[in-house]
Image (cartoon, rainbow over all chains, first blue to last red; front, side, top):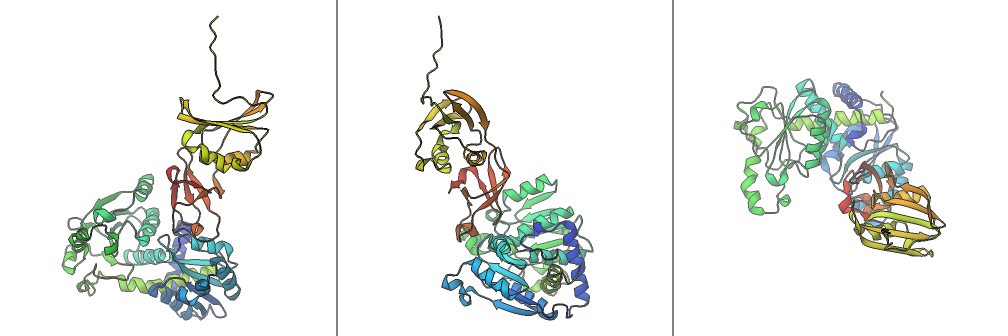
Length: 303
Length: 153
C-alpha cells in the first residue's frame, strides 16, 4: 500500500481493508505519536467540508505532521482559472501526500495520475469517499467484533448517497445481508442490485423498517434531502417515516448500533443520542484513527 | 437460363476498403470516427439498405484506402458487427471483422456532465464492461456510458 493512492474503496483488496482496520485499532490505543514528524500533508478542499477536513487534520496533528492547504476553492488559485492539473503538480512539490476533495467526479483519479506524491480521495462529487467507508467498516467491526454475515440496514437516500454505495460495495465482500429502507423516489439504483445479484448476496427493499428492525445488527441512517424530491408534497408525506426515534429501538438486538455519516439534520431524533445503541459520534472519532492508519500505511511509516 | 441478377446499390470500387454491416443510424458516427469527412479519397456510401441481420444497414466504400487495425477498431463502438472487405482489382482480397477493445482512450465522451473529463482538458478513458451491447465504464468517474448515450468526439 506504500506510495499507492487511495481513490476508490475498490482499490483495496479485502486483506488490505482488514489491514487498515487492524492498524486503526493500534492507533486507537495510542493516538498521539510522532511518526509523521517532518512530513507535510496537503489538504486541498475545493469544496467545503468540516468533518472530513478536521478529521484528517486532527489525524496528522496527533502524529506530529504538518498541514498545508485550503478549505475552500475561493482561497485557491482555481478561482484565477488554474487547471486542476497545474494545482496538483505545484502542490506535489510542497508536500509528501495530498488529501483532496473536489466537486467533479473522477477528479481524484486524475489528480493521482498527475501528482508526484500519493493522493487520498476525500470525496469527488457523488462518486467515491473511501476513507469514510473505511471508518464505517472500522466502526462496524469494532462494535460487532466481525464484519462477516451481518444484517445491515441502510436507511434514507439510497439513490444519491455516495457513502451508501461505497459501503454496499465494501460490505458485499463480507457476506452481508442488506435491508434497503427508503422512499420510492430514492431507492437503491438498479446497478447495485445487479451487483449484489451477481455476488449471490441477499437484500430486501422496503419503505419502512417497523416490522424488520428487530433483525438489524447495524442501522446506517442517511439524510433525506428535500431537494431530491420532484414533488414537495411527497417529501412532506414521507419525511417522518424516516426519522428514527428512541422508542423504535425497544425490541431490537442488543448488539445493534446506529451509524450515520453526519451531518445529521432530523433523521435521528436527539432522544436517541443517549441510547447506548447510538454510535454516530464515536463513529466520527473513529475517523481519526482510520485516517491515521491510512496515512501512515501510504507513507510507508507502518507496514 | 434463369440467372439471378445481383445488383449493387453502391457501385464497386477497384481498390480500397468496403465497410459493411454498419447500423444505418450510426453511419455518420462511423464516418466521423474514421475522419472520412476530411479525406481526399473517393468515397461512396449507401444507407437504410435492407439487412437481414441489422434491419437496416449502411455501407461505405473508400477507394485506395487501407486502414490499420487500430484505426478500424475505433469504429467497433459504433458498429460492433461491421465487416471489412479489402478490395484489390475488384476482388475481395481479405475479410476482416472489428474487435471491441478492452479499454481505450478518447473516441467517446463520458455521459456524466460532472465528470472531470467533461470539465478539464482530460482525455476520456474507458474500460469496456460489455461488448455485445457496448457499455463503457469511465476510468475517472466510474459512471457507465451505454450505446444509446455514446457521443463520439
